[in-house]
Length: 116
Image (cartoon, rainbow, N blue to C red):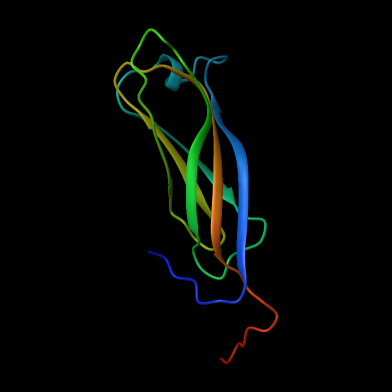
């Protein structure tokens, strides 16, 4: 559980294409076994500390002739941004993905005291 002890809470969200491997024959479309794709995303305004981040697939285009396997999440979360990570494995063929994300956390306020 994340507790916010602050009078100002910020929410930022986005929708980003993570990759499109179909057109250029990238490894998510042509590869086998464990594969991973990362994308660093930055917040428009930094939070006071690392926020809670939720990530989900908002679009996926996968080959129907193979098993659909996907794992998506947020890693390396800081006050300034995070890495979205997509993983697949086995014979799964992924043409492209888009992710939707939301970050919720304490943000600086003009009434915050800076003592030292």
